[in-house]
Image (cartoon, rainbow over all chains, first blue to last red; front, side, top):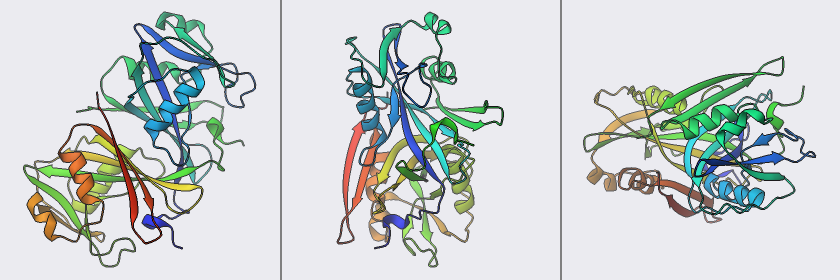
Length: 168
Length: 168
C-alpha cells in the first residue's frame, strides 16, 4: 500500500519532543536528571521527552509531565518551538515548548530523575542543561511565540538563533 | 561523530509540513492544485508544503505562501497542528496550521497551481482536499488552539479526532 497523504520517507524528518515549563506561584518545576541517563546525566532541566506515535504534542506534554514529576495539568499552552540540527543529514529535532501552571505541588520521583521546585534566583547555582535559561526566559518573561533554531558547532557548542512572532 | 542532542534516528519521526490560511476581509486564499501534482491533483486547498531543513515552521509558511501565491506577510499565527498516521511504522506527518491576513490581494500563479480568492459561501461548489472545511472552520471560526489526529482507514477514508485547548 502507498503511504497515506503522500508521505515520502526520503523527505527531511524531525524527531518530535516536548519540554514542559510548569510554575506554581514564583517557583518552577525542574528535574535533576538521573545519573544513568545517556543525555545530560545529573543536569537540571524542565520535564519532557519524546512524542510517541499515536499521541499529539499536547498529550505527550501532559504524559511526560505526569510520568516524570507526578504533576497533572489539564491544559498546556504552546509557547514556542525549537528546531535543531543533529548532524544527521535527513533528521532534525523539533521540540514543542509548553507552559502550564499547577496548584498541587506534590511531586513524585521516577527513574528519569528527581523533580524539585525552584525559585528563579536559585537557577544560577544549578548545573542546568545549556539552553534552559534562554527557554525559561522566553517562556516566562515575554508574551510572543518564539522560534529557536540550533546548530551544533564542531567544538561541542551550538549556534542559536531566536525569532519572536506576536502570538495574536 | 555522535548525532547532537541525543538524536536517535531509530525513534519515531515526522515529516513536517505547513498549511497557511490567509484572509482578506471575508475572502480566503486557495490554490487549485496543478494537474501534474502527485497528491490531490486539481483539488482546491490552502497554500502550504514541506518544511525544509534549515528553516523553522514560520519561515516555511511564509516561503510556501509566497512561492505558491505571490502573497507576502510578515507574521503568521500558529493556530493548530495535525498529526497524521501514514501507514509507515516509524514515520508520521506533522502539519503546522498558520493563520494570517493580507492587505494586498495581488496573486501570482506558480507551477504548483493557480491561486484564487474565494468567499466562504463558494467553498461548497469546489472540489476541496477532504479535511479543508474542518481546518478552515477550526482556524477561522473559533479561538482555541486545535489538535487534529488523523488515521487513514483501509477503505481510503480517514478517522479524525479533534481536540481543542484554550490558547491562553
